[in-house]
Every structure is written in structure tokens, then in C-alpha cells.
Image 1 (cartoon, rainbow, N blue to C red):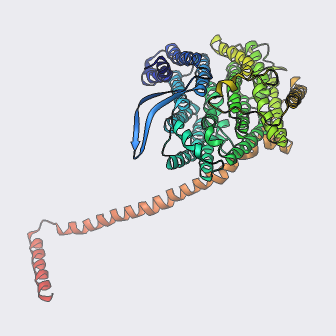
Image 2: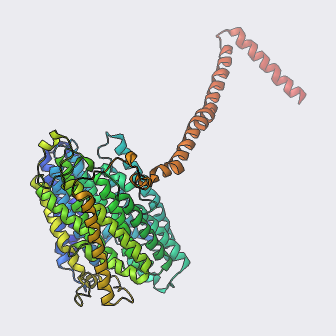
Length: 633
């Protein structure tokens, strides 16, 4: 086994080992040891990923780590095989790097929790499955990781299982993801039926002869995209992600901002050779992403829960990633995954620091004036807010600008709609920032007297993520500023064909940047004018006087609509089958058969009275009946 294969195996096994120890023997381990073990195991995985990355260049050939033959079914043989290439290298750095920081952060955030060791076991288990997902050399291994992160998501969302609402949120996430997974499985079976393989390399060779727009392949890729919609929370399968904020804040940062929800993006990027042959599917991806980006952004404008604002922001940003993929700019889609991972993890962890300081208060109506009391949280949160708003030179500017450029090349009207979504992002994020950190404190005096900055285990990850949010965008400097400056395009160029916005001159691109940045700054100014002085405080959804604002605060009542359309009918059907079919019909038949047996046995029991005369009479009657039957017949 080569050194590269050993490093890749270390990436896989380190978090698995930590999870195994913590989930088997966690109850007997001290909290400090458990958190140290979990953090060290993921950090060891990061070190291995970093050493692998240092050996990887744009020209480096991919390699496979084939552990064993997994299963054989007819002509199909699937290996437990893992693939390492440039795309895997970057995903591993994000997963293990941000994962290590969130583990460190959790050591402080979850220190007092009674389920501390179990929590870290789940986190390690999640990182292991996420690595499986992005390193799988075939659809079968990838799907194992796909379902594994779904399981861990369920466990972590419902981590505080004594709260029934959190259990319902976990169940909702599990069910809605299974809906998407059904589409993914249908796509896998269609590909298997035609090409007799699930291996990515073999599939890429097999589809070289397929014509663009092939109906069968289009149907298969649409099914794959349905799976991506579920995992990456796109319309209409998005409502699980805001409810997933029921889990601890580090869970929101790791699973629902930086890693798991980007699995749908990874699925499309990894199989770009399939999607590039199906223009209709790409158009579907584009319009679903655009609709999701706008829809979620409008909801985020009127939310009062700090984590809910970030949740709808995540849904909206995932929409932007799919917009990029829908234009065929696969590298650009990944670029936004990369930058978003840093600033969104930073924002979620910053929100967690605020919640920790305010003794688990999440309603922004009862915050304010925290800038002086939480200086590190304040400055790092501001950096994250600037980054997600697309203000240069922070990370979000470069990736979002590139998405808008590709969209303008496709259709200026679509560019205008996406720009509107970007402006709403800037407004609601600075609304959140001003409500939390500016003005005066609006909570109770007792809480205010105990507000203090988070411990170093929580602030250190904030500072590292803030630094990454400052510099991460420079891996994709637009070539309008310097020729051949886009490192990411060069690094992934041999794996994913490099795309450029067609028909856009450098002057047009600079103009688009100027329009976008100016409009964002105007939105920041409006947010400051409305909320920065601490004079305007949001109200509860039921107190909204403007019907449009009330509808936004109530999230368009989508959950109520889904309950009416799906949940209530299924509950009614279940109750019908439970009370009528099961209790009365099925149980009625079973009970009737039992009563018949008891009645019959009761009658027969009368004949067994122990009297010899009765038995002789019965024998005589029997003999008479036999003789009579023989005489007659």
C-alpha cells in the first residue's frame, strides 16, 4: 500500500475509531477526554487530508483505494473502493478542517450537557460518513455515505430527545430526505440498467457515445437531481432544514451549513459528465435553484430567530450554487460551496456564541448592544456578514460575482432576479447583525448582568473561520483582474471542463461587479437606517400589521399547506385503517374465530363428562350411522 493510500485510509478510519470508542464506552469516559478524543481524531483526519493535498497538483492523476469486493449480483460487481482526485482533495479539506474547528468549539459549547460524550460520538460518526460520501469511487459507496450522513443528521437534530418538538423536527428531516433518496435510487437503477455499472470512471467512458439530450439519460439525471433537492433543501423539499435548527448550534454549523447540505452539489459536480449531456436537466436545476434562492431570501427578511435567519440564508445560498450548476459552470458551483462553508460556519458558530452568552435566548427581539460585551464574537460575526453579502474583497464576493456573470451570459433577466436575491441576502444579514450587536440590550436585567465572551475553545474557531472568510475567495480571482489568476479553474481543469461566461467582455464584467457591489452597499445603508439605531424592533408574526410582512414572517404558511395536503390525509387514512380496518375488521375476524373455537370446544366438552354410559351410547350411535351409510350408499 502506497503512502497516499495510507493517508486516505487514515482520513477514513480516524473519525470512525473515535466514534466507535465514544459510542461503545462513552458513558465511562470523562467529558474532557471524550471531547479531546473526538477533536483529535478529526484533526488527525485533517492532517492526512492536508498531506494528501500537498501531493496533489492540477496534473496529478487520480488513484483508487480498493479495499475488498463488497457484493456481487448477477453481472454487477461492486467494490468497496475509494477515489482520490482534485475534487476529493478540496472537499476533504473543508470537511475535516471545518469539522475539527467545530469539534473544538463544541468542547466549550456542550460542556455542561448530560449527553456530551454521545454528542461527540455522533459528530465523529457524521464526519466518517461524509468522508465516505465524497471519496466513494462508485454510486454504491457514495450512497452508503449519503444515507449515513442522513442517519447522523436525524440523531443530531433530535439530540435533545426529551423535547417532543425536536423529535418531530428530526423525523421531518428524515422523511423528507427519504423522498429525495427515492428519486436518487431511481436514477441509479436507470443508469445501472443501461450501462451495467455504478463506477464513476466506467460511467464516464460509457456515456461518451451518448448524444446530448438523450431522453433516457435526461430522465435518469432528473431523478438524481431529485435526490440532490432533498439533501440540499431545494423547493419543494426545503422545509426540513429550518426545522433542523432544533439541534445544538454546532450541529447547524457542521451539518446544515458547511457539509451535509452541500452533498447535493457534490452529486451534480461529481457527475458533471452526465448532466452536461442533458441540457433540459440543467435548465431544471437552474430554475429550481433560482426559485429557491428568491423564495428563501424573502422569508429570511422577517424572521426573528437568529438561527432561523441563518437557516433560510443557507437554503438561499444553496439555491445560488444550483444556479451556477444549471448554467453548466460546475467549478463555479463548487467555488461557492467552498467559500460558503467558511463564512456560514462562522455565522452559525457566532450565533451559538451569542446564544451561549444569553443563556440560550435565540429571539433577536431580546438582544441588542452586544458589541462591547462580546468583542471577538462581534468582529468575527461582522466579517462573516460582510462575506455572505458579497462585499469585496471577502470570500463571498468572488464566488457570487462569478455566478452572476454566468447567469448574465445566459439571460440578463435571470441575472436581475438573482441580483435581487443577493440584495435581500445583504439586507436580512445586516438586519440580523444590527439587531444583535447595535443599539441597547432589550432582554432582562438578570441575563444582561451575566453576559460575557465565550471561552477560548469557542472563540478560536471563530477567529480561524473569520481569517478563512477573508482569504478563501482569492483561489478564484476573476481573470478580468489578472490573466490565469483563477487557481481553482486551473486546479480542477483536468477533472472538470473549465467554463467561461460567453459573450461578456471584461468591461461588461467590471460593470456588473460595480452594479452588484453598489446595490449591496445601498441595502446595507437601508438596513442600518432602519435597524442600526436600535429604534425599530421586530414584532411577533401574529402582531405584523402589513399582510405581506405577516405572510413572510409565517414562512408563506408552507408547513401548514404541506400538513393540509399530505400529513392530514395520511393521518386520516392511518386512523381509518387503525380504528376501522384493524380494530373492527381484522380484529373482528380474529376475535370471531376465537369465539367460535371457544363455543365449539364448550359444546364438545359436554360430551366428555367421564360417564361410561355416555361413551357407550356414543359408540353405539356411531356404529349405527356407519352401517346406515354403507347400506344406503
